[in-house]
Image 1 (cartoon, rainbow over the protein chains, first blue to last red):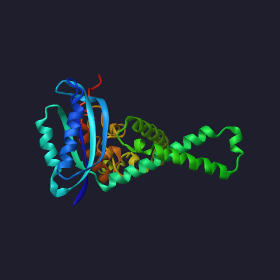
Image 2 (cartoon, chains in turn brown, blue; image 1 turned 180 degrees about the vertical axis):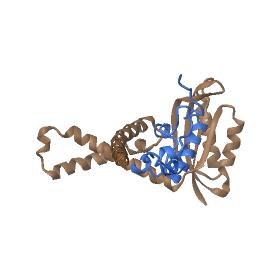
Image 3 (tube, rainbow over the protein chains, first blue to last red; image 1 turned 90 degrees about the vertical axis):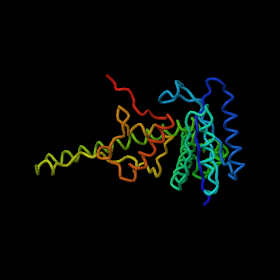
Image 4 (cartoon, chains in turn red, orange; image 1 turned 30 degrees about the vertical axis):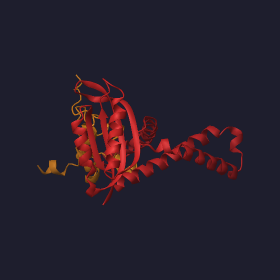
Length: 194
Length: 79
């Protein structure tokens, strides 16, 4: 069966920052040699660890996505490489499910909507509101094209900028939801008292 | 005893479903942190109000995030 795999590994860069390139290129070579196809390489960059690993507080995260047939057993081959290499602090390889892909599409669509909306809000100066609907639609279409051009970077889930933007949007949405829930709970509690 | 059993617990309504989240990604630590206690434990579904499916996904995501040092196994107890 053809699977989409995602592998994430943490490289120690305290001694030699170039270690990241050597490790990631070696892994990519291994994947390609054994019949996998690399879809996406996404370096997250240097990040702070939630807890120290081998007395290191910072390390470099790299994410690689590739497709391969399951009987090629590529995850095992990569794991052997990870185990041997001292510089790799942690690694994780998993099969990307349909649900995750679905979620990514939803997120991408939301991002697009958000970009368009924010741009429209900026454009909405008093005279702009009096314009015809057709013109606004045109401007919206132009914006969509722009966002599509931005898409390759914006769709990368791991890139810090996009994550931050998503997070902010979610928080806003959740605040509204929270308020609603609180109201509902109050109503419910009142009913109980009665 | 009966009174205790019949008491209806305040159950928080799950926020995950309302947001339209199909898959809980372990990379999204901002979301996961909300389902951790101060000590870094996973909050049970009886308090979070998640469904079984959501809770399974969540626990898997949190465990993956912990392994990759995105989330702590134990966070400091504030006192």
